[in-house]
Structures are given as structure tokens and as C-alpha cells.
Image (cartoon, rainbow, N blue to C red; front, side, top):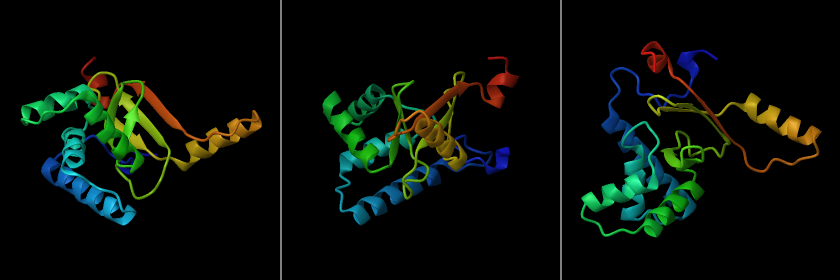
Length: 165
């Protein structure tokens, strides 16, 4: 797979982040409407905060941002909003970082594979059918039924590698 074919979370040169966030919110509104889910003001704001950068964001960072907005929110409120967004396939939870990233393709249910730069914390989301298939095949060979798959690979992105991070 060459770099041009990778689904990018790293913004390319000339990337208009406002359009990126706007499109993510529009997609979320449409998805919630189609599924009959309530996309409340709080859930929308939490999703916007997740998408505000192309890096994983923690629940307490979201909570701090909500407080800066003048909203009185407690950790359970943020976690409930994040749980809703995860269940709606709008957000992924990265266990190794205890953080969240927006899903680049919520319209198709998929298993996540993530390349996580330990230098700049940038994340690239993959949805590689060959990886999914290989995991299912190996699990089946071992008599195991894989029900949920989340693969997190940590390393260094090209920029951090070249900077000697």
C-alpha cells in the first residue's frame, strides 16, 4: 500500500481543517438521523472537540474544553457522550492512549487498525480487509471467535523520524 492510498488522519498540505470538521459533523448528523439517534448539542460539541485536531484527545481534555465553553459538565457526562459517539461509529477509542479519534468512515462498520506516532501522537486509521481476514483466520485456527478487533501499532511517522524524535 503506498502513502497516497492510505486513509489519512494526517492533514495533507493545503488541508482546510474547518471543512474537515464541518464534514465530520454533517456526516454525524446524517448518520444519527438515519439511525434515529438523538444528536444533542453536547454530543455534537464533544464530537467537534474530538475532530478539532488530527490527534487523539482524552476525555479530561474534552471536559476542560467544555468548561472553557462555560458548560458545567462532569466526567460521567463526557463519557456518556463519548459512549454514544462510539456506539454510533463516529468515534474510536484508542485503548493504549486512553484517548479518542474521529472515525473517518462511520458509514461502514469496520474494525480499526491504527498507526500511532509516539512522537507527535498523530494517528492514521486503516481499514485493511487483509488484516481483518488474517486475524479472523488465525483466531479460527486457534478455535477462537474474534468478535471485536482493534489493532494499535505505535511507532514514528516520517516527520518525527526525520526530526530524530
